Amino acid sequence: MNELFAFLDRLLEFSMPHLIAVPILVPMLTAALMLLLGEEHRRSKSALSVVSGLIGLLTALALLRWVNAPDTGGGPGSIGVYLPGNWRAPFGIVLVADRLSTMMVALTGVVAFAASIYSTSRWDRAGVHFHPLLQLQLMGLNGAFLTGDLFNLFVFFEVMLAASYGLLLHGSGRLRVQAGLHYVAINLAASSLFLIGASLLYGVTGTLNMADLGVRIAQLAPADRGLVHAAAAILATAFFAKAGAWPLNFWLVPAYSAAVSPVGAVFSLLTKLGIYTILRLWTVLFAPDTGASAQFGQGVLITIGMATLFCGALGIVGTQRLSNLAGFSVLVSAGTLLAAIGFGQPAVWAGALYYLLTSTLAAAAFFMLIDMIERWRNAGMSIAPHEAAGDAPFLSRDLRRLDDVNLDDDAQALYGRAIPAGVAFLGLSFVCCTLLIAGMPPLSGFVGKFAMLSALLDSARVSPAAWVFLGLLMLSGFFSLLALGRTGIRHFWTQAHATLPALPALEVLPVAALLAACLALTIGGGPVMHHAAATAEGLFSPTAYRQAVLGATQVPNPVAPKEAAK
Image (tube, rainbow, N blue to C red; front, side, top):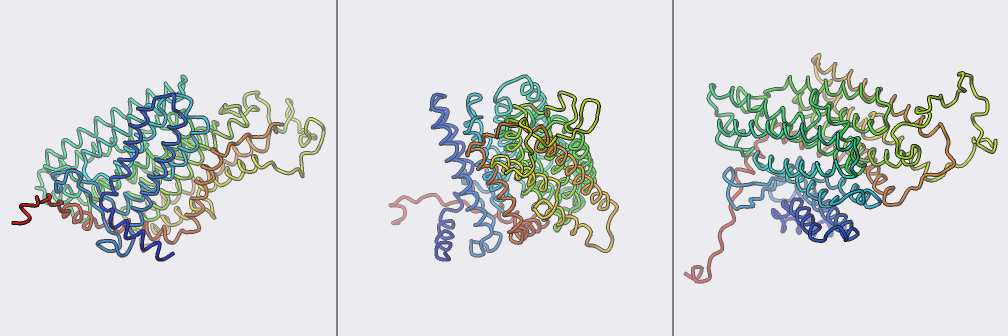
């Protein structure tokens, strides 16, 4: 086994840095090939989508292993830099693979691979060009995570958003069109703010390379800092809208709930892209060594994060629609992460990064699980049958207790019967999602929240904001547990149906794999938390990132044989 790992490490070292471009090129080329095939080759498209997702996942895991291997290039935590145009930064395009970007690309690979398999069961046939749009969205996501300059971040954002517009409308219907119009409008406005903020930042600093921006901001004249802060505020507004931060998140729950389930699972990554962008730019542009601009906007991040967390908690306990629960759980995780970033402490960031992984996997699994539960219990509706009829499940119309509620149509007792495998899978999966979303022990959702709080409260003087954050985390966990427990009782313990759920293997396996990944995060919490802690330390002190990007050298031009002989 050691020899195999050594061989893989040598292979990775040989393929670097070109391997950094693979997560972008593979989905782009796959989408182009799918468009050439036409809609009559749906099976071929499905197979290509799954194969592309597998290649992307394996590449992401290889990159993740490379940046953490102790003998790759610069030692532990190596940073890979790829210059596509062979121009040195900050003059040319640059792709950067560090601990944070490779972790996000690996997370994208896991979710996208599961969603592509799940979609082949039925949902890819609900409209045209599903798989090409999915591949283009993956191209945009991976490119945004790996890019090292602000302009190409905008380009990959737009590629991702353009694909998401088509994916949200996939399956048609009035609700999807209505939610899609709001989604398109808010994202077009955010993209306009992105361009304005980036242009203003370029006008002041003369660069859009992220590493170079941090260096130049530290050297700015006092008269120019106000413009830089204004540009950062405009950019932050755009990223807040994309991350689902309050008060710009009114569109998120309707849009995510209207999308078909595999699209909703992939959409759980979009808010994390907004979170990633805020974390990346804030730590590079306003690092502790940037002088008067250090930690700019810290109070705003904490306030907006807590407001988002509170609104998400109220929404999840107030909704009666099963499909809305997953959307509000995404808001809760977004608010938690924004507030944790705002505290500016590496130990808190480590717990937040761990929580980001588990909350995204849980939300993606929950979107697909909701689809299976609704098909079984509500014939695709979002409201349970007894709610539509106005009757309480265990009471008569005059609100008297029914003594024979435990009997079926043949007056046979329901207690003591074996639970069918399909019902058992749905029930156990729902319990796992409940524990993960609510942050209850023993699963990884609790580990992430506990890591954040223990780091935040482990100091001689705890700030009032930390106590408020503690209260909101406990409140959101309680509300999530209450709402999901109520929903579980409604869908699994009432209105028993004679039919059993029909669960194709193509739908069961992706959900089981995502929940198994959450379980693996729990069991292997030590190495994952070590990676998160090292990532947080690198973000807090971005000197190594800047040196790697600005110090990347060009590849020499090939020398002709005659000139070489001279």
